[in-house]
Length: 243
Figure 1 (cartoon, rainbow, N blue to C red):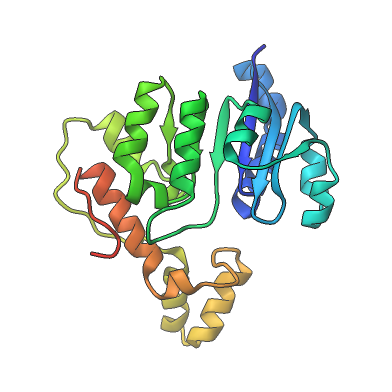
Figure 2 (tube, rainbow, N blue to C red; figure 1 turned 60 degrees about the vertical axis):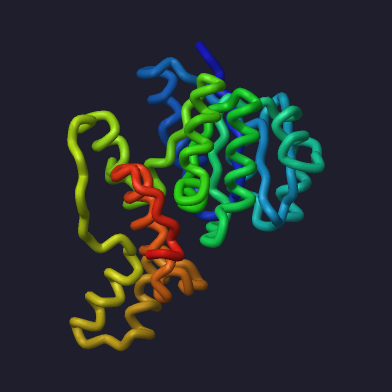
């Protein structure tokens, strides 16, 4: 049974939820797909670059309540992304760091290095799509690896794979929709008579909005998603600043 070595770039809500899901589906992955997995690297701005060739205990990662307690877990501290990749040797890297709407960095560089190192790269970060899609797709092809990013827009809705895999002969000439869940909740609440502040607080209680919802309410999240769809589905390079 193959053991997939996993590297986690970023350890906020997204990758923590991923680890919870992997634990929940562990027996199913073994029985139906004959896959075992092992977390051999974890990195974030708060905990640095930690790697363990033997693997880290997923439940311990979830139970750790602070950057200091994460640093006390299994693994060694490395200096940068390249050293981290060499020490953890992941088969798959899950990139879920913070969005940089200006240039997509440092996520673009991290994904490129992961692909060049021989790992498949999966990201929930819109920045690398709108600022580095063509380059990263080329690097992935050169190294025979997958570069996947379905959760960057509408999460579980298969927007990108639908058009790329199921409707390859279709030419998309336009699209419309509500691309930001936070603004959807806010507008719905205000239609029901609640204030903007109350509606935003509701979105935060539901876990839809971050504690700092600036990107949502200023429109940047929606703008970046428009850029991502135009870039991938329509083949038009449209920087979010132009949206």
